[in-house]
Length: 281
Image (cartoon, rainbow, N blue to C red):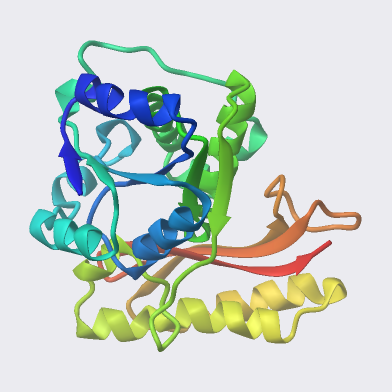
């Protein structure tokens, strides 16, 4: 496994691989890796000869400086995980390497940018697409892999790919959960024992909706889920919605390719998100 810290060194390394017409896959991360990230790398290995995993805590996507400051950075743990799962290249640049000077970045991500997470974290997806575009420019991957847990983020990245007419293929991989249903997240490390228990209400509410899903009962299902979450001590709900998976607008017929339930809540001091696909067509 090669660890690269500069754009120039990575481009130099990937040049001959590209010339040999080997497929290159990219798995962008902010570190604090868990089995969800490993699953992305394992899927990437099935699609490409060379897998690049980036670790970069991107400052432009944090709307709260305190959130950036406390974001976990267990580097030794991350390196061991990547070595174990057979990752080929780790790209781990400094902030100065990725942002050598002042930049003005703003692209049209469509109306969905301002819904749900976009409403609670204004500007977040501009920062996300800014760094992902930079990583795409450096790596020039054939395929890039993202987790379904960040459902809205994947939509925004697909919008960015369309905006610049990039040739990279975006593949979304399923959410990986703990045995008790909690979606794996780098932020789970901040949960104390009681918070960890309380956080289970998010996946329970999602599974309850999936188990009883009926297009005609959406308002009732949403209300029941919100009630479940709001009745849990130590959990402050931001939203629970069932929406069209392409637009994030309220679900109605005919919907896009899928219907999805999305939830965000603060559990103790930690904000968590989760989602579940309910129907596809």
